[in-house]
Length: 333
Image 1 (cartoon, rainbow, N blue to C red):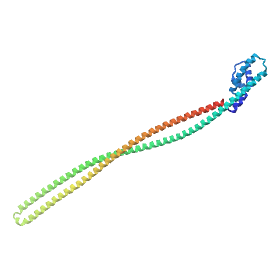
Image 2 (image 1 turned 90 degrees about the horizontal axis):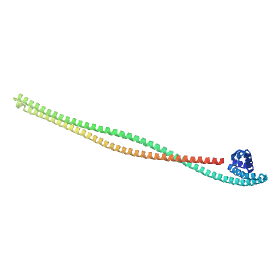
Image 3 (image 1 turned 90 degrees about the vertical axis):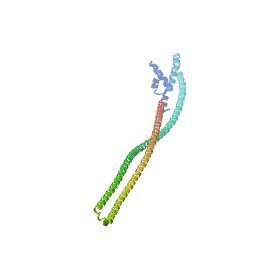
Image 4 (image 1 turned 45 degrees about the vertical axis):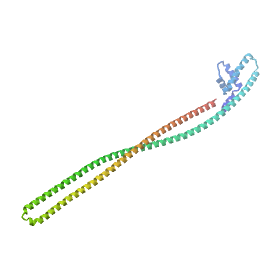
């Protein structure tokens, strides 16, 4: 119990309280223990109330025997004072014990509150750090998802370009094949026309030589045979040259067709590879979306735990405030 409360209680002696009661009673107006305390100059109500009750019990004695010596009343008051002093000591002892118990409880509660506040602060820091790490991981996954989406778009564009290039290449291959076939056919017709023209020229020469050299047939027979041989050799050379050119054209066309076929096969393999890559990217995108969903659920769970911890911290703060208010009320009493 505080020292100022004990000092104020020592002022509330039986004599002082009885005198105050007598003084207030003479004023012929209602009064209460607050008025007694004011006249006495302090004191605890746990001491004043029993003295007021004792004074009221002594009043019938004063009324019945007003001639009772004051010394007897003083002795009675002294006896009451002794009893009340014992009661006051008991009250003080109980108050002291209660104060010690409250102080011990206060120290234990304060220690527990500090420990809980420290644990909650550590958990809050860990939760905040985990929240920060999750936000960073979420940002990184979103960045990776954007990159993979862009890569998927690029792959789709590359696939579209490759398909367009393949279609264009196939179309060019058909056009070149048709061109080479047309050129070979034209070369063949040209060789046939050359043969026909050479044959007609040869016939004209023979006819002319026959008509012009009938008389000189014997002398010019060898020359005619030689000229005929030369014409035939020239014709054969022309035919062989045409055949060789046709073969070279066919070989060149076949090589070009083979090269274009290989390019088309490579483009098809590239398209298949890009399709597989696109499927892998789609699978990775699906996994990334699942990971993001899992992380969001964990993030929501951590937020709920954080809110729960903060609510517990608020409850502890309210408990601490209630304890402090109770201590204030005990000190006032």
